[in-house]
Image 1 (cartoon, rainbow, N blue to C red):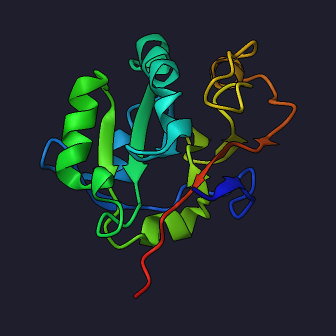
Image 2: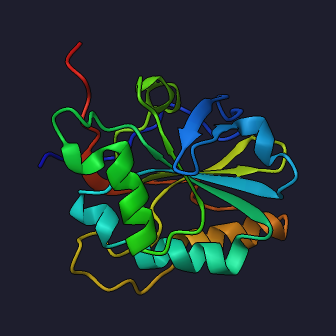
Length: 184
């Protein structure tokens, strides 16, 4: 396991890069499918990373609290040839076991992760209703899988975005396993 911090490629105000990816519902999903929402939270994630596993409850809490207003989208960009736990079938299994209600998509070519500059899992990006980046960073302040969160960073920032309040710290790095890149 290689531990990484997320890094800045997209800057605040940048538009969300478009995508068309297969979801665990066996349908293709495009960024434009979510334009009716007041914002979009895209989380680069996977099934096997202990940092992601530790956030499943927090992700479900985000969906329960904001799923009507904010589109929440998980994207798995890991190379499943070397990490079979991250296969498409295992994405379906994990989503069912963890009761994930949000769209979970596979980035088979890894081009979407590269467009976003995603580095680790989880690596969350919050966009406003215009599709512009307002926050890139952690879900909460529990930075190790066994830590307990004392601040729900993403909930606070989504609430600020929905209230048209300024998010003071627009980049607050997430920590997790490196995305497992393909070796051509």
